[in-house]
Image (cartoon, rainbow, N blue to C red; front, top):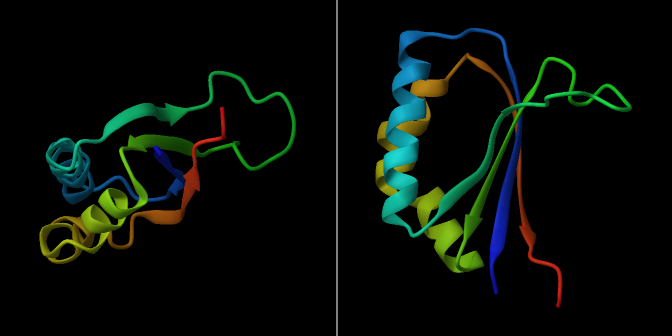
Length: 100
């Protein structure tokens, strides 16, 4: 069953390192058989404040195990994730695909 990783990101400091994070995380994501579904700010906020000034990143994974394997990988945790340090507020969760 597919799993979706959803991140709500309030970027406060767009550094050159953050731009490298964006590039490298996308490359690594592909190696784990994932793809981006959404990556950016809302075109229009219809209600509430959560999405104001925030970007949303939704990626689709073939399984919960694959998503966790990416997240816990040494390459992500030690090489890529530190590039986004002190760049914003990140709320990230994994969600099961709804039953059909």
